[in-house]
Length: 88
Image 1: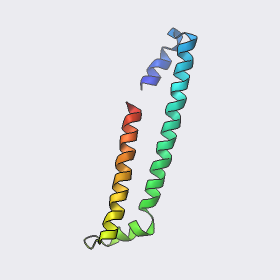
Image 2 (image 1 turned 90 degrees about the horizontal axis):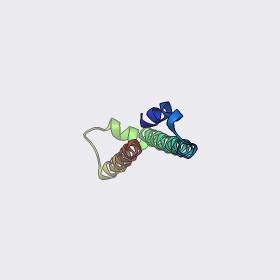
Image 3 (image 1 turned 180 degrees about the horizontal axis):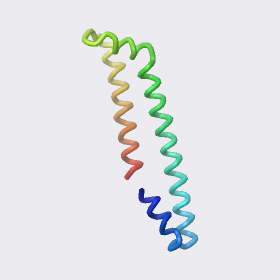
């Protein structure tokens, strides 16, 4: 949103500021793409047989299955923190 506001005011920017804005947009786009790739990997892991089978056995979790879910939970929390950091 801030980048959109800055773009609409681009006529007020000098050339150095315009270059900095372009670099910031590129870096933001790159980080968004990295986060999208990370979430895609996490989503794929949810559909992986061990996780899918765990979902089918609700109420009958064993230690290994609980630790698998914990790894997934930690990955999702880190991804959320990264996305929040990107948004500022």
